[in-house]
Amino acid sequence: MEFCEKCGGLIVVKEGRTECARCGHKLKKKMKLQSFEKIVKPNAISVINEESDNTYPIVEMKCKKCECKKAYFWTLQTRSSDESETKFYKCVKCKHTWRVYR
Image 1: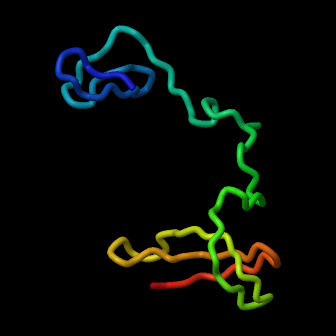
Image 2: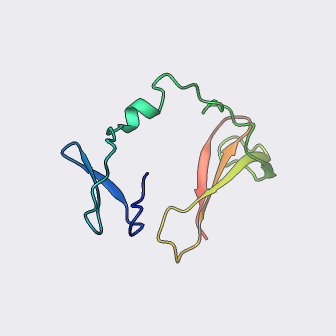
């Protein structure tokens, strides 16, 4: 991201020319458009395996399916921001997943 040396506005690229979005000052140097796909490597390796449950804390919660007393625990904001978050549990033994609303 580049900023105008005159007014501090954002420099944008229009039809191969670089100019300030606020005051219209044209820069002498040329800039290339760079797409997001070129910045992010397409063959990136994820650090955490999605099937790995060892990143979640284990709490004492009885599974309704197998009656195991331990489950993984996490929260998500599934409704509007002024409402409380939703708690999700996943059984350590049978992998049954359920949620609890407050």
